[in-house]
Image (tube, rainbow, N blue to C red; front, side, top):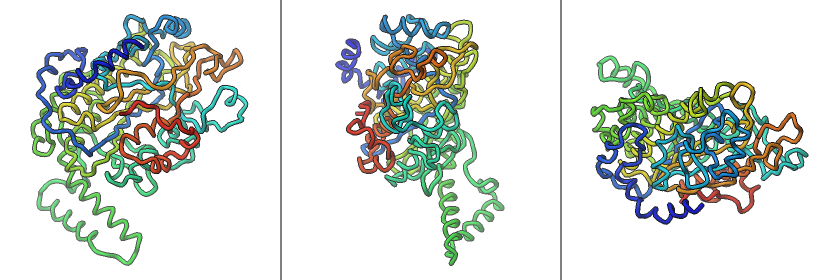
Length: 482
């Protein structure tokens, strides 16, 4: 880890790079552009903080996203992974011991300025669990392991039972009560649900946010809108009707405030009046209009979130949680192409890295780099041993990425598993079950608590949001947030 120590020692000297927007790697073909970005137009908000949950649906192969580079472990990795093994000299260095998939070059400079951290072998757990305890069932273990839908629910709910109705993002938003509901640009999922609120689901850039047929300033439209406002403005003796009317009023008011922000499209100057710093965001996301590598559903989702952060006074509230998603990670077959650096998984990770790098650059350009933290989640990891169709199957523990100015980057967190099939971290014991399904060494609860503590939640609020955290004793933080 010597290189990591050097990186940490130099971090203060290089920290200013985050304010100049020079953090998108030349892989996007625009290195000179980023060096010309102006200094941040807006000062850092001293109180505003936002979490961005990026869910990788299908089960990302996190152990081909972050790979060991030291000789002994890389040799173990290559021997088991076979055709899926990435060439060691093509990995994007994360210090001396680890590297990112070669398709994720865009994140190399985010790592270099200390704003990126991998977190190893995270997954749903009720309690810390050894292999012996797992196999003997002497301690609780999560429901329905290796099931897409169930494991998505466990990650999103922050629990180990699939019957939890709410999500840890929704519970956190309700607990602090200072920022409104979770805002989703990636559909309606469990993550943003609280007891009394659902997430606010927004369309992509250019979409219409409001009651269909009730937007615009035409005479008929205005008359209809005024009639509905009048209908819902009165008091009613029926409690249920009053509640419904209040929800309608809130929806209309939210649409009036956010409709113009949501409608702004990439590389358009028309929204400068409603999105502060729009020119800087557009410049950071310029490849969204010039390259198919970023003009993806994920790229557009993160562009939408960047606008909402910039327009935070219009959005209102100083604590926000956003949700975005990318699908396609269920790589049972043909995970790689002609080589391990090509194919389905490489394309997905390239889109992921490019979109994340654009978002990171945009946050720094508008002076919000230290105030916004993006983190990944995914259904589960995948079997370390490939299957017979050049792919991987459902597993358990997985590697995740955390990104932002408040991240203690330039280092790694959690415990990387022992890579031996049938070893202490593999659930398998008999020859037929030796596939490399790693037992998590860190829980979703610890991962979420580390993020929520930075976000502003008190220890009592964290315990309310994540009731299983109590089972991990003093190990309440994974240490990756400043």
